[in-house]
Length: 437
Image 1 (spheres, rainbow, N blue to C red):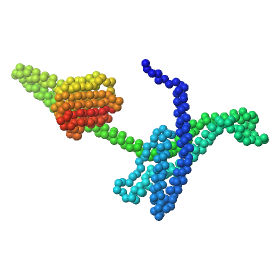
Image 2: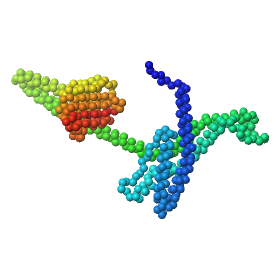
Image 3: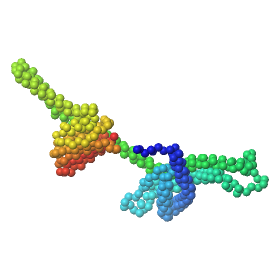
Image 4: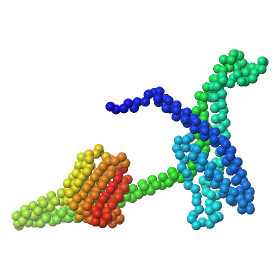
């Protein structure tokens, strides 16, 4: 029997309420700690910076200034750790400039002063008190308003009032009864309590986003630029690989046509010309020549069919990858142990690439490996399509340019996949290809 995983509405609402209260506590803690930290960093940063600048003329200011930058870096590290509960993710530690190995002492000391992120840390230490003070004031007002208003009946008796003194409800004409006063103040408390979460959340985000912009914004921008450059490099590599694979395939096709069907068609034309001349003088020889020409025609058609299968195998298009690989294994001159379970139809580009990987690998095994058996496995994994071709031949295969597998590597790279060859001498060859789906 299956387990009932249905969540009751009450459980769902209690879970949401629990998360809201937890976030409210984290945001309040962040704001309340941020205010004293902001005052401390403001005083220390301003004092260290101006003392360092003022005493720079006697060289005493340089170590003071460097110490101020390192202090600001320490407070920035603490602030990045404090940002995680508010923003819901950890802030990565940015890259700080470092002096090269072998640099002089002066160079190592001056390096933090020339680092852009160090200046941003110092700016945060100086100006963070502005958002932290605003957030602190709002947090105190809203928490005091909520708690004071909701608990008004518990402490109203402690407020001294003279015989002629009127409180706010009486001045507003709401009556002079104790119950009216309680209702009025508790209504204020409910207002602050009802708006407590959005106000505290907004103030925490105000302070946190200000800190994130100065302490991690430049580093995040650098990472985005680096990712964009990496994506561009990958795209250019795939484009180059596709062009190279296409050029290799075209050269191979041109060579195969030139060495096979083209030569046979030339001989066919010569045989038919000779037969035409023989019909008037020697009909029997002409019939023999025509019969030989017919044989050449059949062989040419067979070669053209083989070449067309190499361009776009009909069985792959009609029946899918498993059937096409089964046909490949049946045509191979070396026994093939094929492990290719039925697969749902994949993207045509992926199926074509997988087919050519296996076809080229089996061709190389038949020509160069001297193997007695080859194992082919095609499995669909969570990350993509995994293809393995392993033989027990002489090994020594390589992906280097000029070897038979270099063009296949370009084809795989053009499809966005990766290819690896493990081929120690005398221990066979294992070709592994992963294609993304």
